[in-house]
Amino acid sequence: GVHATIAGVALGLVIRQDAGMSARHALEPWINAVILPIFAFFSALVAIPQVAIDELSPALWAIVVALPVGKLIGITLFGWLAQFVGRGERLPVGDILPAAALGGIGFTVSLLLSRLAYSDATVADEAVLGVLIGSLISLVLSAILVPLRARHHRRLAAHP
Image (tube, rainbow, N blue to C red):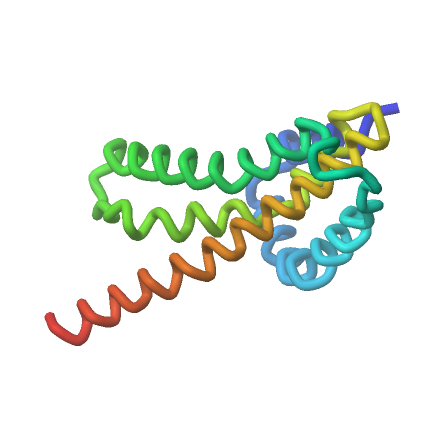
């Protein structure tokens, strides 16, 4: 009777750290290369709504905007603030921005939550579509920001 997500979190909280890290090290390549893409593929199966653009639910539009913009602002802001906690080297905001844009691409948890959040199947389908569109926007933004920042660092390395 316990949802698999809750059971997984509970298991993660009670497992010993050394055993957990050992299992993570062994499983991570398989999870990243096989399990997550299969999960994303099956989770993304959604019917495209047969309605006009102005009839789409506000959930779709909120997710399309909030996913890339929220990740960009949240990761950048808290990544910048976190640098003041420790004494290590500080990154310029220009280096945090591409990582923040990449953060908006991860859509597996967003897909799961969009299915759990809406009881109306039509709204849930539109929310999933919103997650996919928002992730695509983040992908495009990342494809622009990462090479720009890489070019900047290549220029700095060439002229020390």
